[in-house]
Length: 393
Image (cartoon, rainbow, N blue to C red; front, top):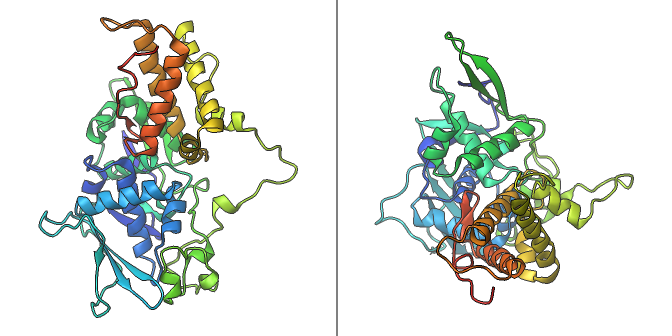
């Protein structure tokens, strides 16, 4: 059974239920839709690339790709207008996708005379109210946000019995992904799972969805609220000081300092790179009962250490997923480990892998390059050729 502790009464955004379930969009594109919707509700707020990156917890290339995805699917119309010294940017977000005729995958260049304004065409029905602090948190991954949104949408159905396999089927991912992110949401006090029993005495899980949590904060900071002058509309000026004096009427948003600007106390030990990566991979010395499977898993993580230190491109993509609450590396490691273990020790009719360590290193590098190129999302790797061709191994 699933129930809502209470719906957010303020500082929330209406998210279309159909958008949440639209699996033709990636996790990130759907999460970015939610973010744009929340920012477009702030009067006078200037949306910049840096703000979107901070609130997604990702780099420029992945955010830009997700914006294009929204444009291609008709959820976003994006415009730019020449100003005195730079472009002025406008976003029109649609709760229902535009017809194929009206869509534009490219950013539209408009003239100065056109009367454009930022706007979110919010739904009037079939929506779920989601707290802005959750939507705007850069520490919460895109998949976790969308799974939370979907769980929250189910609370409107009286006496609804939730099953993780059913959630996985709707969101088109595996059950382990749903279970993993429910654990993440539980650790942040957004989802509470308990055991109960029905009238027949059968046990079942009960899910309580909390509208917000003290553990989840918006990644906006006060300087992100721009004064609205033309210089502040420059796509690269997201951190200028123009918005430090914000009036109390600023849409009741609780603007806290971004988590990325908080520094550790001098008394706190700073963890090593290896410790951070092990934490993000959720490494356990006894994760697998099968020793060979555990050894493959350990070798995959060792390869990540080597790539982080020696491959700049892979280092950049790994660095994007070292924040608390981001389970990306854990998912990548588990899927690569399963693929390599099956290929090495259960080759079926395929050639024997003669050099397992070299093979694992090559697969790990290939998968992270796919991730860097956007051929992967939080729901799973898009398997390429690295695990199928064994020449030189």
